[in-house]
Length: 461
Image (cartoon, rainbow, N blue to C red):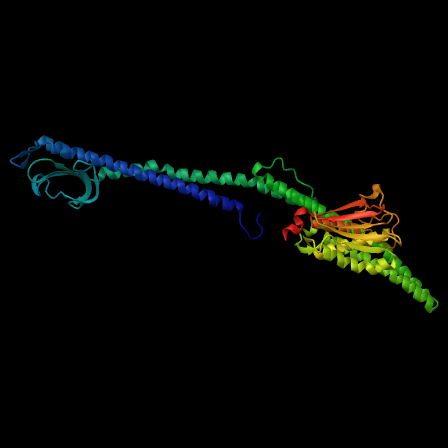
């Protein structure tokens, strides 16, 4: 049922199918009636012309003058007709020879039948007639034989023709019924499928079997099932995200409450300052966790779709992010170095997201690298890439597939991490149709490579 505005598919199909079918039937009936009417007219015209030719055979010429000898019996036979009134006249040069005076020499609706024979309409004594005219070859002035009859037989034939064509009306009704039935049966699977989906969607988002759906509608059914699958997956991801966020926020919030309670119980200013310092650390860790959770929600490919890509310089991004982490690296006694291969490497991407991904890779490397170690940023060309290599403790082979999962932290991590940094990097890579690879460095540390498709490289600019 159509509860709102919009178009009716069944109504559109009826209009697009029924009107042409009815038009074809009506045009066919009209063309048939016209052709039949023309055929009837030609048959009656030829009868008239046959009578005129028979009369013309009785014409003879004497010294250039036409003479017609017609016996009373022949004239009676010529005039005999049960339904129509027949008239005839023979003229030579406009001079009446025999027959009924006043038969028109010309008229309307003239049809030529060759060899000086023609038929046309006229009026005799106030009655419409059809006249067959034949020119008799001979010496002297032109001699014309004309035979006329009224339209009684023709009118009866036309009425009979209408009765013969009466089934066309029944054919129109039959065609309308057949098209309407076909359209309803064609639309019925759609209505049934929509009702089934509507009923099932209120209770479940599981796919509905499409085996019994007509082949023409199967792509539509598959597309709807795919949509249900994406909605189901999106809802599942949202539930998982909400559950994980609630679980991960429970611990830092409890820490904040405990730190506030300790600060309230401090007996002197010095102990209060120490409690506030711990509270500040816990607050920063909580803020970092919230920021990472928001980043994951914003980067979810299932909900975000495609992102607009613009030209981005990997060398400039690596230099900018590396300089931002330089003070933290120096404070930890870690050497942070950028090794560009050329002044710029241009890719299609989102610069802000690429900065966030590279920052997370550097932050991850600093947590695994002890004092005295080093971290190297490198920009590749073919294919375009950014790599972060460290001299830290490395990641065990059996753990390399897990580090990109949410809230997973490796052994030997330094400081308060969230376990979301590498998961965010992976999501950013997916949004850029790229990949993140993990390998061991030459010093048994870790090496992460954010690699773009070859078509995204500088060759396009």
